[in-house]
Image 1 (tube, rainbow, N blue to C red):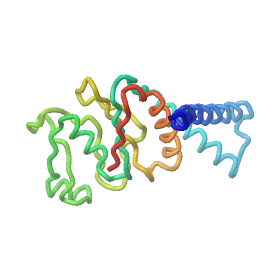
Image 2 (image 1 turned 180 degrees about the horizontal axis):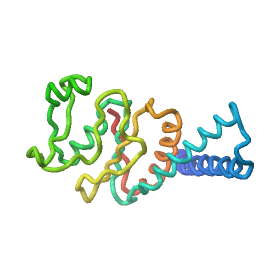
Image 3 (image 1 turned 30 degrees about the horizontal axis):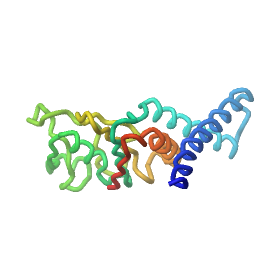
Length: 189
């Protein structure tokens, strides 16, 4: 409907505006030099980190507008990257007792069985085992399907800081704007 179209068209504008504002703040700081200190410097450092993560996410490319986009979202450690590896055809096996104990994680945790161990393929994305996030930016994963692109996303409450959460919100808005033709599926783990 018309209201829904208005909301969709505003999302990319918001993302573009935030990225532009962050870029402007960084340019101003470069012209002024390193004279800021205290809270102002902290804000500028955060703005630089957000801009860096927005740019890193943009460097992964936008979704193919004609393919269905599947974005896997959830809290850090919920199994997003494990699901993406499974969708890509990787064989998942439980960690051995030694592996689990060495990592300090539950013995029911999973990992990808590599080709050297008889698995069909290498992991397509790193699986974290614990509370430290592994995925830093929203990125497309080749799962071998000509019709679907799966996106692995950093977790909500990412351990890398609020800058990652803000940057990934911007990158999700951009993905939403480019995926309208093929459709967007969001999987929350």
